Structure formats: structure tokens, C-alpha cells
Image (cartoon, rainbow, N blue to C red; front, side):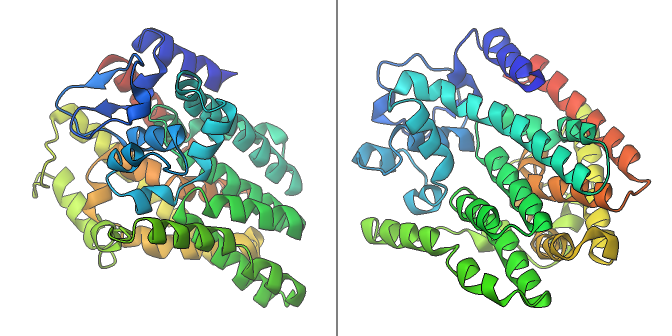
Length: 372
């Protein structure tokens, strides 16, 4: 209900009842031809957020219309993340006017589901289910809600996989991972952690079903590469990742005023808030590093934390340059840290949630008042 209230406040208060405002549509990339005749909130002089890409896909998930691929910066790279736009298309009955609403409402529903899954996780560790409300403190939740991207769906499916792994239920675990892989490619890390856990615990009968988990994604990628044979895959690994700690150190230099990142200028208040976000991000990495070595955390979560830590430490300033990017892109880190803190009954849980809440409130205030 709180997520729905915040979503409604943004859509009706900030954007006058026009849900396209959440997609952060710019005027520098072609729009999907299926948006013709729709009233849109367009940001002048802006390239457009990832939400604009997901909106174009939601209007035509299979990219049947050549105008859809023309509206995407990379039809293969964007097309891999099929599930979120496909759900919006299905729930919107293929109608552009309804799809615009569904993109945000799916994320509202994901917040409720994520809270329920964390509540269940808490119960499995003999803690109050009211800890499910802790998801509302995570800034990545609200940033994703305000930008119409797939990150919330992906992290909700990750939480579902965590609960299923804790309960040792192979069917729900495999289904959650399969859906997560079709939402965001970073979910491959959770799949790898699950396979390693099966080997560690000698669950040999799990190995074949788990090996089949990425088959739908691989089949979809093969079709995309065949369809857009002249287009580079666009995994952008070299752009988004670098040597361990190199991006982190450059980000620290930016915040200290020692380094200027291309295309990013931080004012005084923005620098302070970005520094607070970066501090929370570093604290989250530290908590996950501790969780890797704690037996009370559980094998699956320990391995998942380790699998997510390495690429996170290799994140380049392409992502770290702006707080909405690294906070949203690595929302899974915060979700796993919350599970680890609950499982380990850590005394750091409340201070970490307090810092996260401060960031979330600050982002909400800035988005509603300052952002265009």
C-alpha cells in the first residue's frame, strides 16, 4: 500500500496523471512508432533513461515492428531482458495506453512480493515476519519504481530463489532462476551460486534440472542474434567493468574533488548525497564480504554473496558515475545483504537500515522536488 501510494503521488502529483513520466523519455533517441498519438512526458535535451528502452520493448516485446529495434540503442542487448516488458504487454493487452500504466504497477506489485519473501525468509530463521517491511528502506527499490526499469522484478525473483533454496525446493528454485535470467543477465550469478551449492551439498539430482535453467535465455539470445545478425551483441562488459577496485577508487576521487568524470558535474548538495549513497554501497559490499565467511548465513547465501561481490568490485565509472545507476543496477547486493543480516542476527542490521532509509528519503525528496 505504501508503494502504491508513493507511485500514485509521483504519477498524479509530479506528472499530472501521465505515467510516461516514469519512463524518463528523452528527445535524442527515436520513439517507438507504437507511441504515436499517446500523450508523453518528454525531457528536452536528454538522451532518455533505461525506462524508455523498456517502454519501447513493452509495446512490442518480440520486436516484430522494425520501428521497435530502431528505437533501441541495441536490440540484442536490450532484447535479452524480455520478461519485464513482456509482462507489461500481456497485462496491458497489447494496448499502448494500458502498457504505460502496467510498467509502474508491476514494480509496485514487486515491492509487495519482495516484502513477503523477506518476511518468509525471516520466519525461516526464527525472526518476526515484520522484517519484511525492511525492503522499504532500500533506496534501489524506490529508484527503480521512479524509473520504470526491470531491476525490481529481477531482485524479487532473486529473493524467491533464496527462499526456495533455503527450503530446498527444487521446482520453485528452478522456476525463479529461469525467470530471473530472462529479466536481467546478472541473475547468472545466482544461478552459478545455486549450482555450486548443489555440488557442495552433493545434491546430484539437482544438477541436470539446474543445467536446464539457462536454456530459455540461450534460445532467446540465439534467436535475437539470428534476427539482428548485423548488430553486435552489446554485452558492454568492457564498458561496465574494469580491474578490481579501479572504478571504486576513481569514484572516490570524483567525490573528493580530485577527479572529474566525463559528462558528470556534481554540485555541492548532489556531491554530498552521492557520497552518502556511495558510503551505503561500500557498507553493503563489506557486509556481504563478512557474510561469505559466516556459517550461520547458509551455504547458498554465502556463495551468492561471493559471486556478486567480484563483479561489483570490478564495476566501472560508467555505472558508478551517478548514484541512481549503481544503486539501482546493484539492487541485488542490498537484497542479499538484508538476507544475510537477518540470517546472522547481526547487530549491524539496524544501523545499515537507518543509513539506507536516510538515502531513500533523500532520493524521494529530491526526485519529487528537484528532478525535472
